[in-house]
Length: 115
Length: 115
Image 1 (spheres, rainbow over the protein chains, first blue to last red):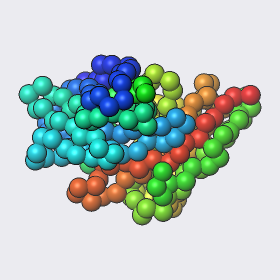
Image 2 (image 1 turned 180 degrees about the horizontal axis):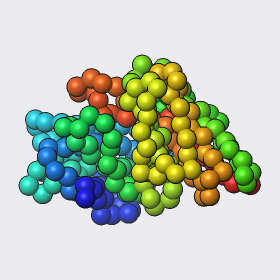
Image 3 (image 1 turned 90 degrees about the vertical axis):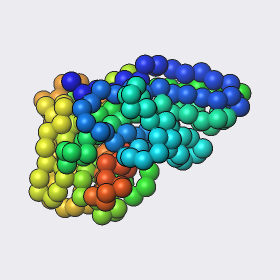
Image 4 (image 1 turned 60 degrees about the vertical axis):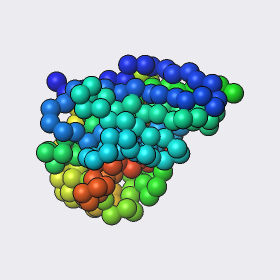
């Protein structure tokens, strides 16, 4: 079965330190990969995506993600965390061959950045 | 939350009652989606529509119904058959461009509770 795993329910990091939120996937073919962020009681906001090309993708708010095909991972990173980065982060994948545009979602990782 | 408007923000349902959640988008997107979000369960797809007058069931369609009579609108009805409707409901849309398709844009959500 196709799936997305976010192995950590919660990540805690001190402000100013680098952060990593992990995502691994199990899908056939060459997927498109996405990261979204959700602030409390709000909808999700798109952060970045990988379709093809450079394995390091840069997105909004200083976030970046590294695609690793051999490890089937797409970890979200930021060099220096801010307290305002505290939110729920979702990884998602879709298959370009299909045209139904459905996303397969991870369960989310809660990021807490401590002052 | 871009050009997607969900209303109301909060909704209360009495037992045996049907309620309808509104979702309107002014992004000219072809595809629209409804998700249910429960704590710790991530996003689960209820219904999606790729074109006007057509829609498909998602993973948890039982107890829900939708219509897509206009491109801009994709209302969700939570019927009395849905025995556990308390959740946060999110509407999303996406367009058809090569680089942008599969990026879903979300509304601010509707929180439904049972009285």
